[in-house]
Image (tube, rainbow, N blue to C red; front, top):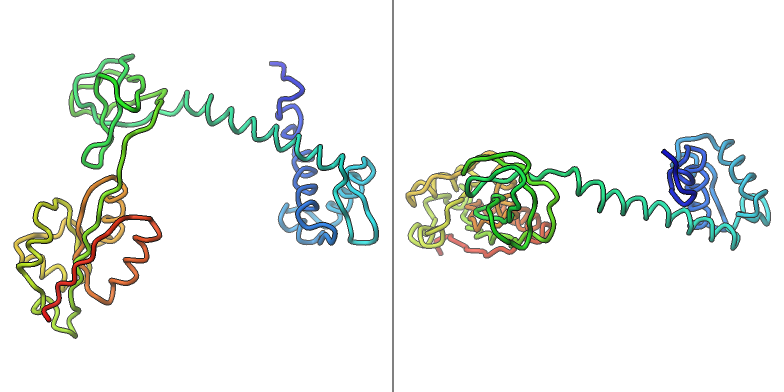
Length: 269
């Protein structure tokens, strides 16, 4: 197989030496004029002597200019080479993302109806899971193999955007045992808050007992925080009953994940 001269596999990605030259020139451009060869060596995993030789070679080719010991600057020719090489790498990465990965990636969904290999199927989110069905949707793909309703099915050549919204987390804050625990929880208010919510977790034994007192079992206790975040990111509205000493850290995690939440303080006043 022949390659075009502009193909990065024929130029910048040809061998480790070319990649090293590219990285070193980029480091010089970022830190010029004072370049610490030891830092570049550590980053690239080579010896300072090798870095010195590379820089000397780049200078000989007119890609780098040296004013005095330790002071280097990338020349106009060096900038042009750097930009051309970066453009080649970017073009190759874009080719991989759009032309290669899309061709080989297979998404797993649940068949909403009987599907046959080669069918065009619409792909959508429902109750936190990816489904595939006949008919147009905002995202469509090709069915890889026959699948009956309710079975897992592979979808290739996915195109478009899968419609999705994050779920909302209801945070039910209750007192820890030192402040009275489940005995000081507004049980009726707790029942009202969690009414209609199908996925509920508990953090703290006090929270577990409070949920039971409200007539509900926790769907998850160990790994409850991670479970709630995962559920919300999959579009499920959910609730977590959590003791106050764990409350602040959990709110920070939701904010970091950019998940919408509503706080309900259920402590008896």
